[in-house]
Amino acid sequence: MGQHLVAAKDDLRRRLLAARAARTAEARASAGVALGERLLTADLVAGARTVAAFVSFGAEPPTSPFLDACLATGVRVLVPLVRPAGVLDWAELDGSDLRPGGLGIPEPTGRPLGTSALSTADVVLVPALAVDPAGHRLGRGAGYYDRALAGLRDGVPRIAVVFDDELLPHVPTEPHDVPVTHHLTPSTPLTPTSSR
Image 1: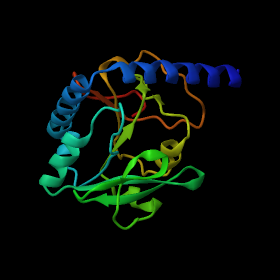
Image 2: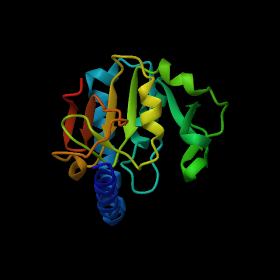
Image 3: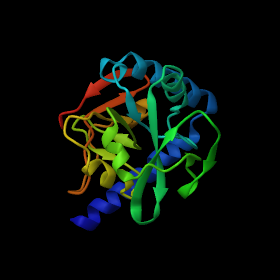
């Protein structure tokens, strides 16, 4: 059963990554604008003073329109720093240049704040390859976010950000997978999941 589930998740990851790679730069940019607008107008996000988010790279749904708007309005933005042993540290995004960090993910050059900085966030945007209505999220398989989210206090919204075709009826899940409380696509509003 366990090996079958791992294989199913790996197969789904391959298909989703191939679909992302086939998406045009224009389609990604348009999705990023729509995602930013939806996030900025969502009541759940509008009152946040500190947002933990990810800096998108490659074929991920673009987060820069949202992050730029947060910085322009004085919202504190925390982004992850990938550390060894599957740990996410956090640093404040300040609008300065980013550098490639662990796994090639863009990271700010500012002072690391430690793993506990995530506990100061009012809202957490979570990268995902897919999500389902129950809040099951498929990541890239390393478990960084599952470990980080496991220690998050109750009541903090965890929002999976995906493209429209990545909102699936069912995502295979394992006991260690931490569900998200909301999902968002470019064409659907911020929606609570049944994991809330």
